[in-house]
Length: 457
Ligand SMILES: Nc1ncnc2c1ncn2[C@@H]1O[C@H](COP(=O)(O)OP(=O)(O)OP(=O)(O)O)[C@@H](O)[C@H]1O
Ligand SMILES: [Mg+2]
Image 1: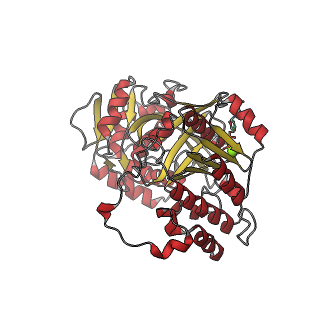
Image 2: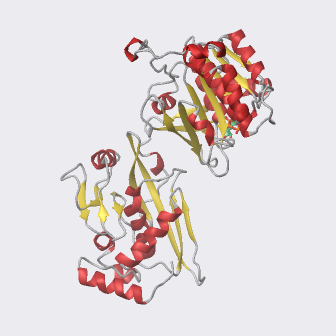
Image 3: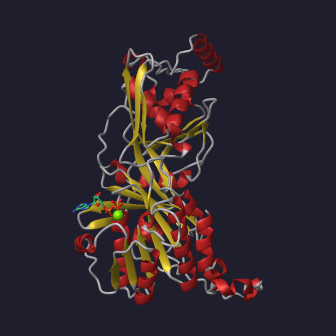
């Protein structure tokens, strides 16, 4: 901490903003806001379309961006592709490879078709070495891969320590602001999902990007966690191929390609990622078990939320899975974090339990409350329009919502109604599912019954 501040002082935090050195720092005087030049710089496209989507246009000159992700996810690939694209358009790029040898980087560049003029490489880990390379090359864009392996001999701490990582990031950030040098720092993510060592880095930088996906799938997802120049929430989608990361141009039905029609436990949820609707298949599997503590497994979905929905299904809709192992998965390595997927998860569970498919042409959208009520979800019209475009005909939605849409809407006020509508009819012959209908007295009876026999779930 102490050392980090000393390092900052040498670079001059005030100097970082105004191009002054540490000695001039006291001269930083208040200026009328209107007197400050307004050309802070428009974002410059990287020409990696999905990256530009997440950055809302591109990289702002002089800004500092942190790209975090798990080992092997493709961080070095993404930055190298972006650098090559920018170098191809006349912007000088310098790649500081603090982890890999020049031969390794060159091999990757050859595979990615990134051997272009205007792109420079230095295999360096020390701050003075990096600063010397920047002085020599005078790049427009600097990439440090990764910040965790860079160290500053002036800091009295071992390489890789929090003090080192933060101190180096601070010096690079000061350099970026002072010289108008667009900088990208690559950072590893720990098992806990935080940017390694320092979450502390997040406040030092202008933009934090997180790159994830399932290493066993080719799909990669890029999000902005923090962005000082525009909104966060946009999702960039890439496919990892032998020739590098390829943007997914029309991802609407990306996660549905392997879907098998007519399968019980499969429900399609029209999710929203930033400005873009994305249809995701949610699968559930329910297996009877003699175990006292049945298994609950959630992939791509919050386990706590699954436990809550199982409780609501039990108490408010009469569907108890207390003696069943339960598996829920969002297909394709995607992560669903919005509560708008609640109803789809519940329907998938009920469908898995009854063995009755929900219908191949149906999308399900709604948040489920603790009272078993179904609530409407933001951006419903856009989600349904995308579902219609991809050939879906019906939607199960909350009672209150858009009056009409491109799909035949089936409205449900409660979870019990939803189960009744879609899994009603001949369900009794298919499964032991006990559906409480619209009758509030029946719901009360079921709740009382459940309270009398508190099945742990
Ligand atoms: N020839 C290839 N064909 C297809 N995919 C490849 C090929 N070579 C590498 N990859 C993919 O690239 C990934 C590694 O990419 P990259 O080195 O950019 O990741 P990284 O996030 O920088 O990793 P690290 O944490 O080790 O620095 C591999 O996990 C693999 O998915
Ligand atoms: Mg790497």
